[in-house]
Length: 363
Image 1 (cartoon, rainbow, N blue to C red):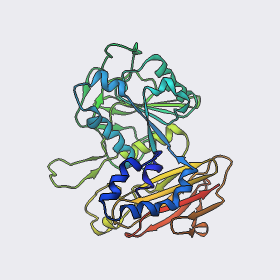
Image 2 (image 1 turned 60 degrees about the horizontal axis):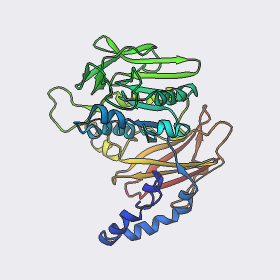
Image 3 (image 1 turned 30 degrees about the horizontal axis):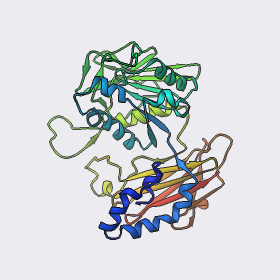
């Protein structure tokens, strides 16, 4: 995997780091050389990202300079994306002004209270294109002039809060577990329909007008929580990830081009210890794409077998022409199924000794 993961995530080269590893880790060079079988496929495609997460460096510098905000906050955003199973990328706030055309939604804006007017306008362009924006926590009520301090939202709270959802709204109906927030900002100036509350105050607000969608969430959801008086090591999932997935797809008004379904997939560990409600994924999907194809690399992080389906949603006006697993050279055309949404589902039974899967879908 040394030659696959970096390229699947968008790296141009891996040699400065890997040269030392090749000399010190037995078998590393052989594994690197073996993955070169996929080099031509990697070279022809770029990493696919369904969602974009804004990295609010200005807000971190201007409002959180005395704390390790990247680890205490932004790392949790990355963890939520990993557990959602939706492919994504970072986009630094400084690029909002210099590279606005590369900004794509659904866009997640986490506690970015320090934004210039041009940066705010760039985010609003994403909404105008119908791609959707999720605002979390502190929002820039006034543009930052570009120098000096930036106002930090008042009444910011870091604790555990339960988000009470309005079950009548289709977006949040039948969320299977309680949704807990690990941060909270009391701010209700976002216009729209309130479908979730925290202590009686707006906690989740949706705005859907003229095919343009925005949402505001008062804090960052927790992916797991420990029940009161439960001091074991069990990680009990909350409904935060389920809500997160629904929100992003609702904002995007489309399904991801490729995803694992369900996610995380049921694995052999869960069948052996069903009482242990762990939700840590034991694999990751690393998709790359071109105009007429998707290369879905599935990499198991642990020697644990699992069942899943690779769900393909072809772009409008296209259809799946051919599917092949190119790591071992297996033709998968007879194994895929269509559904009423014109999606293609590829059933997968991945054994514990699987190195990786590299599934090429041609349109």
